[in-house]
Length: 259
Image (cartoon, rainbow, N blue to C red; front, side):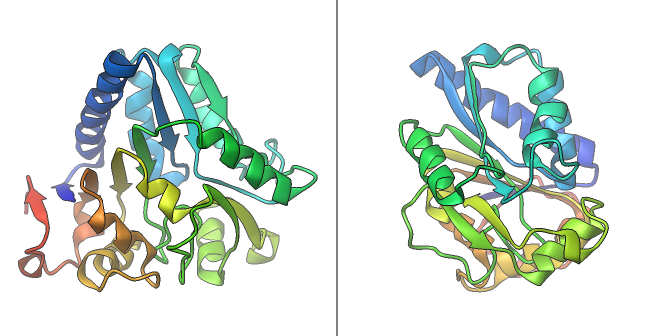
């Protein structure tokens, strides 16, 4: 894992975006296309803004997957992650090669996670864009996360802290309105990605970042598993990194830290 810390979120997004451009374009050169996973949510806005403005990627050679979707939520719902991706990413770039959405409102959720899982199983993922939840979750794998399943997508129960985060971000008016279940990409599927860019701004993520980096690698801190990935880049702004005891981070490669 490499950790990059910047004062400006826009500068952080630029560095993450430039790294992503290199990874995607290398995959296109070598394989004729790139397969990527895209995260959603307020914390991902700046990195997505950078990528949608990029003139350096041929999106017609890129296959999109996304991490998760609420069960029972249509893509017309304001909190739908499919809607987020369409409005903020897909509709802002040139025609993409393929978009593989998780259909959270499918009649049979069990059939849906199997369907989307069978599609992603045919793709080697070149880069996954992820974040870290306030409870440390990776995708919607809340603690204690399942580190063992090899199913690409699974049905998960959302814990109260995760659901409250969705309220605080303005996705829902109250916790009672937040679905209790979702279809989520599994931890092992995320970790199969050749490279991972984890983009984590904002003070509200600082405790989760500290837990991820300074506690043991454990399913109680789901994002801590990212430390085991050989090509994971963690991008933090100053508020998100504010609780780190950097002198204790000797196992990490700390890069371009500006204090």
